Image 1 (tube, rainbow, N blue to C red):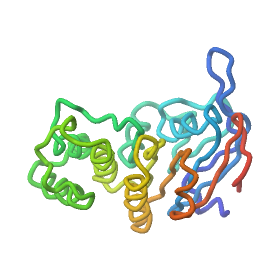
Image 2 (tube, one colour):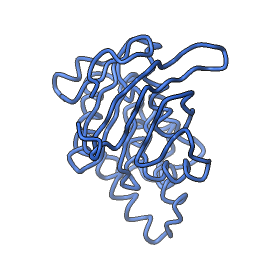
Image 3 (tube, rainbow, N blue to C red):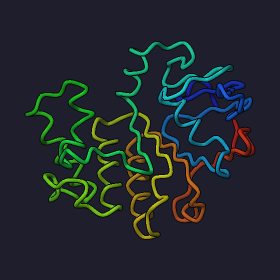
Image 4 (cartoon, one colour):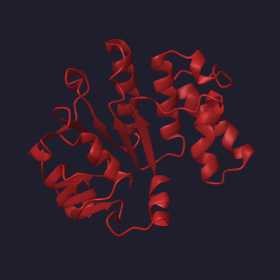
Length: 226
């Protein structure tokens, strides 16, 4: 892969926790703009840790990590916050605000960016219609099924049109049909230009929704490196 095209660059990336446990060991890898990437590997392989480093949730112990031109070892908090404005994040447990309506959950990234209400409303309506929830704007998350909550999380992640969407086991708690529907949405976002990086155990989904596979094993790169 050309480094010039790389949206994320890793060189000998290491992550060691204060306890002494090594979560990632010497990972060298490039991820290009517009790729759809699956991170696979056993529990504890380092998938979630790698995703967290991509949005500054944790910092590398050593090595190099460049994300959208940002040096994640050197970036201060303001730079990390700016990076997150261009990054959509989808968690397995949704992390929706249950005291807020669906509309307010999806609007949150836009409010953080300072969008005015008159501009924000049509954008939120559009993304909720895209995920089939245009009629649930004023519902609260607790009134939705697990699959619907995950679709709200996808809408929230895409609402600001991020360059990168990170998804940590987004189908882990869903039935097969709902999981495939979630993957359909992510694939469509990828076709629209977003780079998608998804950690998953659901390897059967790769058959119907192919992408680049990067496999981690015990914190090291086992397959799919550049």
